[in-house]
Length: 278
Ligand SMILES: [Zn+2]
Image 1: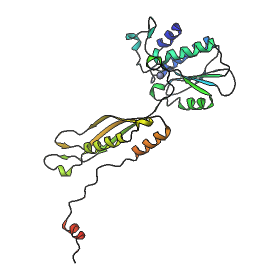
Image 2: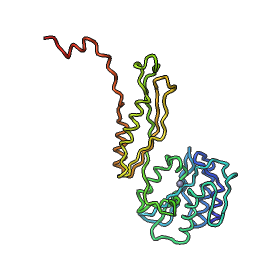
Image 3: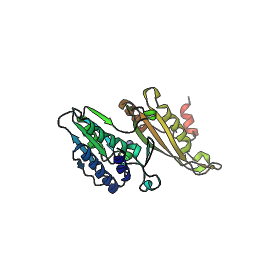
Image 4: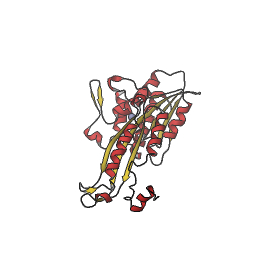
């Protein structure tokens, strides 16, 4: 298993590098051929690395073993962080997440053939959102009786039984610049508006049902003596239920500015309308 893992780690596979991801996919295909005797089905992709599917056994309702062979590590990492075994600990780019999981799948299928058919998917773009493998994963998972994701364990070796959904937002606020000393009344502060929005966004969270909202980045304004014309925030939303995702996404996309369009100072005429003569 260590030798097999070393061969996979030696094939650096940053998600955006199609050639390298394809070379790593070749190695994964070889591994499954050696351990199980089964040839991989290759789903060709133009812009990303190819996706691999290995089908073991015939029949409906298979178990899906879900893996990915891309890594977050840029090409060349291996030179400074080579594959190393130190006691019961292996290091090297992508060994933990999740080339070791691929090796486990191949050797487990060699050691014990489950009565159910098994489908293994090894995708090439998990670290960048799975856009090119998503349809394949969803289509295969729908047919499956169970999906085991062979990502590494949580701390302490704990098995992960669920995963939250994620939504990312960018909020842009446009105000109106003005000199803070000379004519502040002509300005509309985007920073002030953003402050309202940040608090309102935070109020959408519901930790009891697993919904959390983090405004992790805020930037805006140019100088202390200028009313800020622009502000921008980056927001991370996590949710445990689809209904919560729907609620929060609707609330965020439907948000109105807290700033009320300032009415012109009431002129005499306007005042008189409230106090009609007679
Ligand atoms: Zn992973």
